[in-house]
Image (cartoon, rainbow, N blue to C red; front, side, top):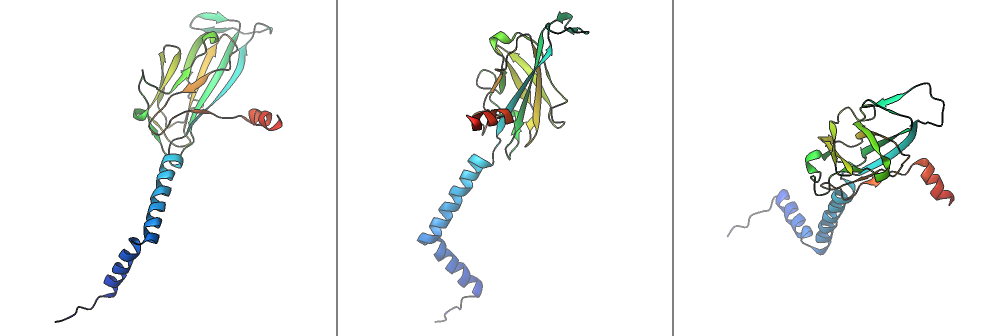
Length: 194
């Protein structure tokens, strides 16, 4: 009877197999899978944040040498709020992955006392690679877009009659449970000095 000699490759593969099915090998495989799952779920996903900036556009308390007309109506007091929605994560977010109307779409909640006059996608602050539009629905503006790549943003400008800084962005999508408000430097300083 002849005994076959094992080649170095077969010896290596046999020892590797024995190591992988040992307790240490199983621990390393399990830990690697756990680390990969945590990375995929928590780190490597779209992280959507928004920021709001409000300012007085025209005030009746000032002596204005100009008029502001929106849709053929003149306004003496008007405020502008810019909302910037940005993907701070590592993965792009497809518009098709966003919850549909009637469920939990990504939207700007318009405060009841804001008296909104006009709204647009502001192309001066929207990333050039993003195609987006706004759909009015009940007390909100639904943000519809094709893709929101990492570090891309959508800018929305809203003109309203009452000074209101309580514009909120809500919604969900695949991998996005909530949309968080970005803290400004002023808010961070307030929290730090409190």
